[in-house]
Length: 178
Image (cartoon, rainbow, N blue to C red; front, side, top):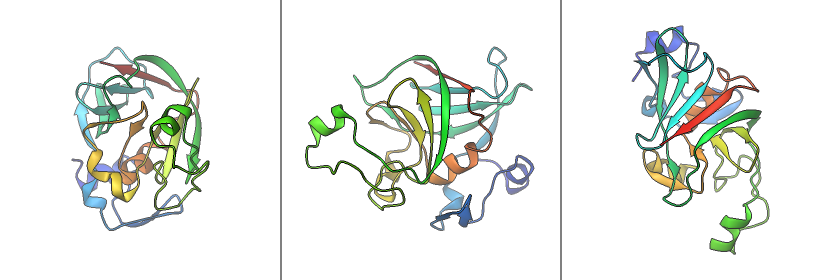
């Protein structure tokens, strides 16, 4: 985990309360962010997700990356390859994709942004093309971080997506590897 000094130097935030206008529970110490050595080979600003490790890396380009624990797709729901971040959204509403709706037909058509049962959490980075995103998580799903839990999205703690979001530019590449 990053020290308070490193996190502030990197432009992150530790304090509970409000980040990017989003109220957070007093769980800032639960952040999984850590500055780690990272091999060259990916462009600065890229996001690399290791499905096996259940880790997301934000590549800084100086031989380091910021690492976060994430939940990834369940077996059979995973995807691999390179795509592009095409949007940044704070408190996004969520409409269950067809596959989720088949498994859970009782879900509403739309869960409003900020609702306690919204699985997108505090923020989302959408991935083109398709229905996938890197996103926060509802309070009831926080324990899933570090597991194989989603339908293909990359799930983070709310405090971690709020730390990552200003670092990632629209148009950045995301590389999802086994």
